[in-house]
Amino acid sequence: MRFAGQVAILASLFAIVTVAAELLGAVNLGTALGIGQIAFALALVYLLLRR
Image (cartoon, rainbow, N blue to C red; front, side, top):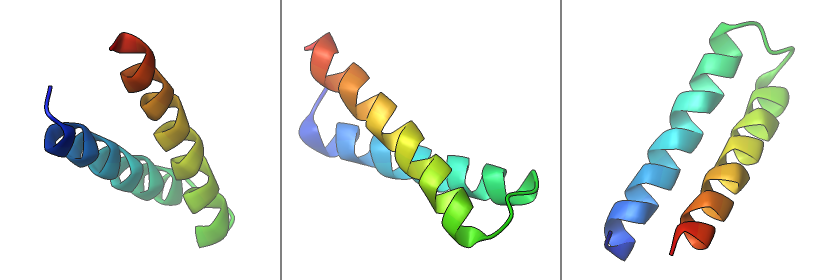
């Protein structure tokens, strides 16, 4: 998978998880962004280890 594809996956995952957390009742946007960061980090580790 190319670098641009990996960046697109990570960015879209961050956005989707952040919006989902907000819709599912996160206390505020900061909490939703924190959950998005955790998902981003997990996906990044997966992509790095998969190589």
